[in-house]
Image (cartoon, rainbow, N blue to C red; front, side):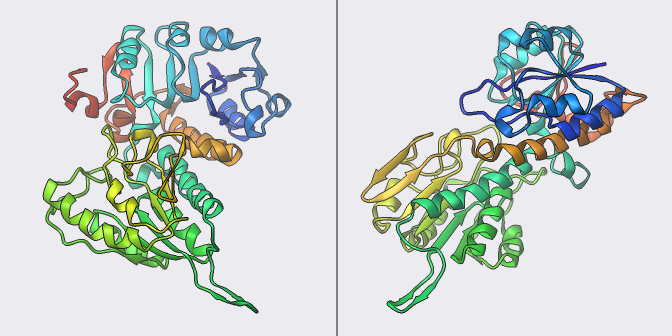
Length: 380
């Protein structure tokens, strides 16, 4: 088997799908030849020489990777031109975002490429080591606090000085998934007073275990969590109650970090312009949902907007800003998934296994993913 590692070509993308340590384990796991596109790992701190040292081969170029490989590993989905260079029956594993890219799914079907999306790994205990979304969200939550602290015009921790005592900054985290929980933990380590809100009451204990106060909103919707552990879209009445409570807490916050996402849909609006209007000048909003439309009404993806003295930051691809460790974690997620797929040094797609079933988007010209089959887009 030939396993190809392609170089990421999206703007601002510095990660690599497999670092040298994991590449060595893949060679052993599949008795395979691992080929690396030249300079694929340079931007994440992994020079070509490190791959050569563990027995991988540096390919002559990008075309060779896609033309010859039986299995291709990447972070982002390769461009369509590269997909068309792949062999029929070959395998691609990456972040596919199939619901948002139905045309790509149709092309994968047409080319009879078996494609697995790391964004669809089910959130069950057995799949935790394969959950690349959680790995990357953890990094985003951490970095969001550093961005907020860097842009804020005041201290985060309490400071006792000869000139007087400065109270700690107040941080509000909206959404207590993986990114939100890491943001809470990081802000607490830096000495801030932290509050957090999530539509799922079940996360209250996790929030409080990190030393933050959980913001309570009277419940109207009883079912706020999907089977896979993600937040569900809520009713209009629940949204009204949520906004009413959030208004009070956003107003007194120095930093607001928003992390709320709904799989396959536009990010929910949590901070309308009217809330920004009542925030203190110098306050900061870091919107981790910027790429999906933003949780703040004034967010512009990839930009910093200043409104009434409040900075609204819409960062893109935060995991890439910590490319070395992001690549290390992503590599381990991939290796764990491939270990599950391995049988007698080959890939075995046993769709009776929930993880393999839900992670596989296309196989032999057919849609496999139950999520896509049930989707209104009619891809099945």
